Length: 258
Image 1 (cartoon, one colour):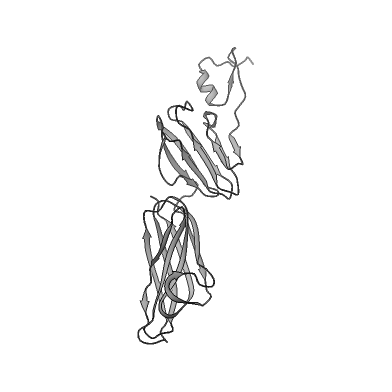
Image 2 (image 1 turned 135 degrees about the horizontal axis):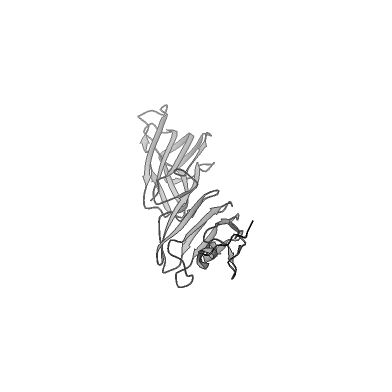
């Protein structure tokens, strides 16, 4: 059998595919399909085109996307990322670069692609989730609190930590009662992490003239204007008068994107 030679492969195409094109027209070598990174920072390069950059670290990881002046990105360039570590991966563009699509973060076992649509303009498309990110937490223990300021019980929470866009739907449920016949009690939710927000009351109510009353409250609220990234949602408690008791506490948080 004769030697198969290709005469219409351009050098630019061969390089992008990870092949070495010799002067005599023969092709050899294939670029590795993955670029394995285990540090906490990485700057994307033109050699990452056509392969997957895997990130793996227990701490947060920053992936930098350089400007066109730094890296000669090709038209339609696609860069694939996959987070194999525990720490959240955050894509950070150079000062002159715009990335459309949020959040620019990847949780554990999540992937995404950066697509160049114009000079210094990219679109980020997360993959590997198939739907919104969500989380839940529950505490059954009966615990009490006095005072009107929102705060923790002896066992803080429930607490839910997830990666969100700028919106999240939060639902809380709790049994509540107060030591005073007309005593007030409430459950609120605060946010920390990428966003800092004081507790917002969600289940405020009063005993209807008897301390024997036990109220089961459940409510939902859409948090908007969040900073995209890893946000921590925390149930907090208030007793306007008397001592309020809370039990069977439950919270669910669903990322609603941006």
